[in-house]
Length: 212
Image 1: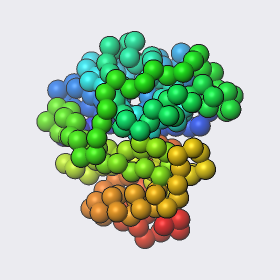
Image 2: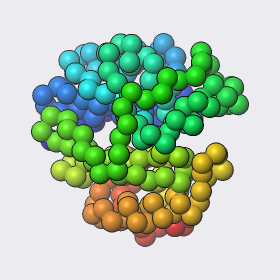
Image 3: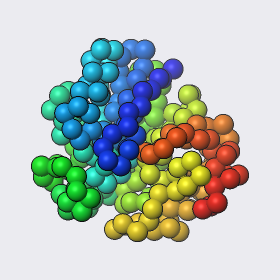
């Protein structure tokens, strides 16, 4: 069984997750650490638990979710993985950081590894399944841990809300379809772990989310 630790980073209160197995293997989902102090929080947890990062995974390419990519690559020598359609947002990362007044040294390198819909990522004896959930951004994905009953949704689905769709590549209809056709087909008790805010469940969002 997997475990996870969450961190809240950068001015957007972005949720970064370290998902790890008993073997010590782990993946870092959306490393949003943007300051030395935030990096130390993330690295301190990984190192104190003697974890072995396999990769960083970006659920999408917006600046608040990719700020720490370079830091984790440098620290652990691991690839950054994302859907191939995130490249436009990666190339706009410097512009995004300036728009929101965030400290960022330059454009992010493009992901090292492409993830496709349905791909299975093995972490210890468990798995994360890539589910394409575009609409908030181009190349948005969610990551489903079937055994544990979790889904990491990035900025697609939140507790009683959904991701904004007014950025380049955003589409309300596309996002609505992603949630209804992909995420709402998961079991009711699946815990939704979003890119911002508190967790929820598929059942609660199907019943109470007024945006859907």
